[in-house]
Each structure stands twice: as structure tokens, then as C-alpha cells.
Image (cartoon, rainbow, N blue to C red; front, side, top):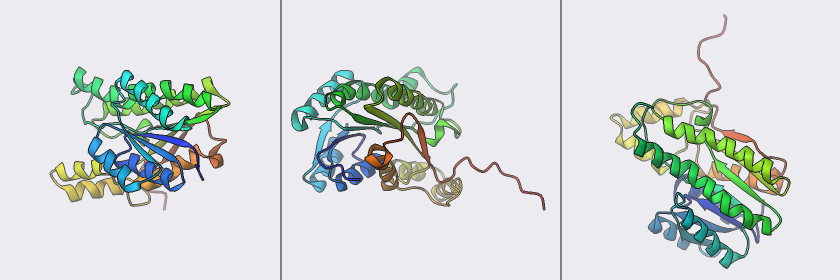
Amino acid sequence: MSFKNKTVIVTGGATGIGEGCVRVFHRENANVVVLDIDTRLGETLCENLGRGSFFVECDISKEQQVQQAMKQIMDKYGRIDVLVNNAGILKYASVTETSEALWDEIINANLKGAFFCAKHAIPCMQEGKGGVVINMSSVQAFTVQEKVAAYATTKAALLGLTRSIAVDYAPDIRSVAICPGGIDTPLNQKAFRNSPDPERVRQETIDLHLVQRMGTPEEIGEMVAFAAGEKGSFLNGQPIRIDGGIGSKIGGSGAS
């Protein structure tokens, strides 16, 4: 899956699933751009990775910042081959508990940001005669837990954005949605710690998966790299669930 001489952008790449993607693409010889609002984590990651990594501070919910980031990347590398729209947030609230401000915050980070990045990366890909947009959706585009009204809405909407990009820019540009299950990220670890019974909540999360464990950021990174590379070149416009079997079992027992 060599990405030698290719430029890969990972939004929210400083930690969690984004960091897993960054590490896999860097291992596969890509020039990896970490796009994130966390300057300390982003710069530290790129310092540790060394050559072939580049940090750009950017709030993807602000179109002007996205435009400037894409220009900065083109000035440095002269091309954009893969965009991984990974950045996002999760805050818990039902429909009636979700304020307008919270709704806008989640929509802006998870959906508007992906739209802005695709909007301004695709013309750069067209200059290079091709590219791939990977949108990080979620298993919660298909089946949801309680109190994730805004989050689940954004993750389902990303499937529509994925199809639209695939249809509008084929055959030169592909788009694929990756839909992870529960991943052992710093964000999830923090959520466990903040719960009344961290061990119980963690075990409940594990038990949702038929494989009886959570996934790792690197496992998602491997799938993203496959979908973005030549071996995944027949994938277009589709969601790929990498969720350990969440939602496959409906409960109950078979006849004896």
C-alpha cells in the first residue's frame, strides 16, 4: 500500500483515530499532513514521526482557515492525493436536551468541516488528475445509542456526502465512508473515567462487539489506507463498517 510521493491530509490527526491514520500513512511513505486545532499534540506527533509529516493548525469549521490550509499544503507539496475527513466531536444529548448552540457546534465540527475540506481539496486533486476522499462516519450512522441525536445525524449525513462526491467527480476522484465501532481512543478513555462506574461502562462497551474487544486507532488506519490505495480502487460511494459486529445480534435464543 505504498503512498510514496503522495500527499495525505488527515483532519483531527493529532490524536485518536486520526493519529492511527497518520501513523499508517506515514509508515507507507506518504507525506502526511496533520490538520488539527491542537497545536501542541499536532506538532509533537510530527516531531516524533520526523520527515514526511507536516502539521497545519486549522479549525475546519471555518472556511477561510480551510482555504488557507489547502494553499499552504499545495505550496509545500504541490499536490493533494488523499483527504481523510476524520475530525469530529461527540457530546451526549437527546433531541429535546440539545440546545441550538450544541447542535450547531456538533454539525459544524462533524459535517460542515468535512464539507469545507472536500470543497477545497477536490480542486487540488483535480489538478493532479485524481484523488480519494475518505469520510469518517460511524456505526452510529446505522444503529445508535441513547442521547446522540446531533452526532448520529452528522454521521448519517456523511454517507450522503460520500455518495455525492463519488457521483459528481467520478471516475478520477473516489469517495468512501469508513464506519468504526467502539475504538479505544483517548476520547473514549476519558468518557469512561468520567462515568460513575468506569470499569462497568468500559465492559458494557466491549460487550457490544461480537469480537469482545474494542478496536484500535491503527486498525481503522489500516482500513482507511486500504480504501484510499490501489488495492481499494474499486471502492466508491460506499460505507465500510469496521465495527467488531455491533448491531449484528438482535438477542433472544434459538429453538432447542
